[in-house]
Length: 498
Image (tube, rainbow, N blue to C red; front, side):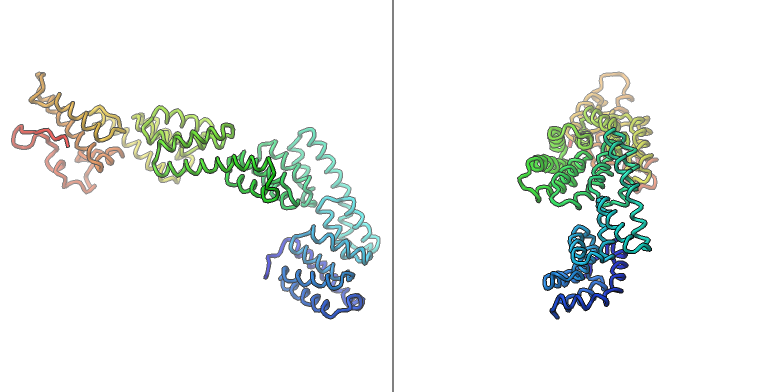
């Protein structure tokens, strides 16, 4: 199996190349110490697989070689080389310790151990290794350079800890940047920088930092819990759930992790359900589910915004305009660039026939997302309706809301038809009665026909011949002769309430 090489691979290969130059010198001692041809075979196979980049397979051969000859320092060194190539410096360290126990003057192993200790932040021990390499080999530039780093790094670490206690978090982050470049596996420093990010409200950077620490520390239930809580605070319930599950894998009886897991799982289920109900246009159930979300989590702004966004949308679609506007306003106070809330509020304004406000919301949404087709279509619709409002409005003619159902429309039509029917009209202005009656009949015709009502709601008048030119409706009887509920042979209109 060929595994991807880590960033440490090139450095490891260079060190291993130096080691191979001295291999012939020590090979005789190694073979005598091993005393087994099988060990030699494992070493040779491991060497070939390592050169080919097949690290996992090479590691298995070096395991066998170590088991076969536990006093051969070369087998430990080779296995440590593979561990480093796999990015497992913690696993490499015991092998390097064993190498130096068996062969204290082995410079390549001591230099490698010094590098690992430096990365872990064990500066005192790293300094001892680098200095010993310099003592044995004064011309070793790498050891001399690393040795000179130690004192300045320790000074910066001490200063960062002092500033952290003083809550000077920006300075802490600035100081720790170059330190962590040299000591990337120093978990304490990474956790300190993560908490400084939290203090500054940069939770995304904090979670990125903590993700590194949980990989470095075995059984880090505390780290997984902290990471889960941060994701939860950011409104990322799925990420929070993923991290808290890692905590419970390590300790199924962990009280804090289990309590948080139950809460996150419940909330995640409610959020997913509210989204489904919204998409399925089950608006009352959507409102009920949003109410449950608020009860489950009344404090985290991200979750509150999402719950109120469901209120905003579903109330708007239900025609509960007062509630819709109130909740949409609350969302936009918390998140002024929430494009969904702007669109939903605009739709509520349209239902309320406040076209100027609807246009304003769509224009704001367009500034946020100039490429949104939904916004462009909504803005076009609101602008058409605004123009239409100055002309004939069939809803106003019948005195019904834009959300009225067919039954309500027919009821209003019957009532007005009786009032304005020319034969029943008690006033003197028969022409006015005829005009009103024709408008009532036209309104009923449009609003009880799903297709025509849809066109009217989008800003068109299906009975206006001028608007229908080129739209494929020129052959409609209304447009050929004009809409006339009285017929062409004198006044013989009969009520049609179906």
